[in-house]
Amino acid sequence: QSVLTQPPSVSAAPGQKVTISCSGSNSNIGNNYVSWYQHLPGTAPKLLIYDKNKRPSGIPGRFSGSKSGTLATLDITGLQTGDEADYYCGTWDNSLSAVVFGGGTKLTVL
Amino acid sequence: EVQLVQSGAEVKKPGESLKISCKGSGYSFTTYWIGWARQMPGKGLEWMGVIYAGDSDTRYSPSFQGQVTISADKSVSTVYLQWSSLKASDTGMYYCARSSSMVRGATFDYWGQGTLVTVSS
Image 1 (cartoon, chains in turn yellow, orange):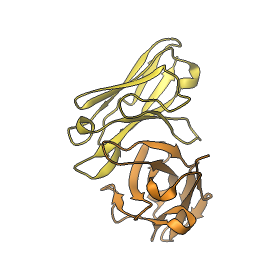
Image 2 (cartoon, helix red, strand yellow):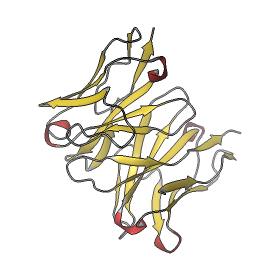
Image 3 (cartoon, one colour):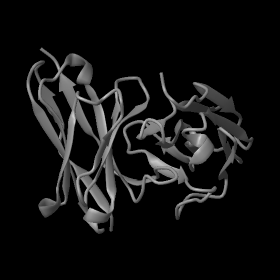
Image 4 (cartoon, rainbow over the protein chains, first blue to last red):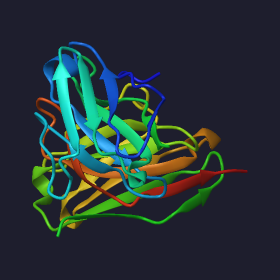
């Protein structure tokens, strides 16, 4: 059971927008920045979003993140088939003094 | 160029010990945290723990406390993940990743390529 809760799967058509949620508590999301990662099978996870909706160099603006209270969301617009992957949210938990991740969300681009 | 290079795949028997490694290069090794994450077959990523390479301050996730040991050797810019007695349930892919800070969140910007550990009798 992951500390952060994500939906197991989401799907949308190419060109559409999808939102992936990540629910936590005041000890993690409520008082820390959330990062989002894309994980394609057989490859290393890739950082997509960090801090207050910052993107590393090379990550397109189609990916954006936001947070309200203890809920963080990742929006992906203009979906492409290459976006099919598992997506994870993560942050620090002040009570556990540990890194916590969500269980991951599998994105299918129909 | 920042790189985290992990040691190769391992096949072990239950009860055996194992130490896998993650070597950092292209950055100031001692000013970053390195974390380890596990992905069991067909499952999601689980964080095991993190270590600050500068002073070896280590924080374990509750599920992994006492099950593994994370250590660092500054002289060779390498972080290790160690088991004293492997179980079949330790089978999985293990990733290391770098973070500049655990304050206000933990952002892992560079990742190793992964080490596959297979534990089978």
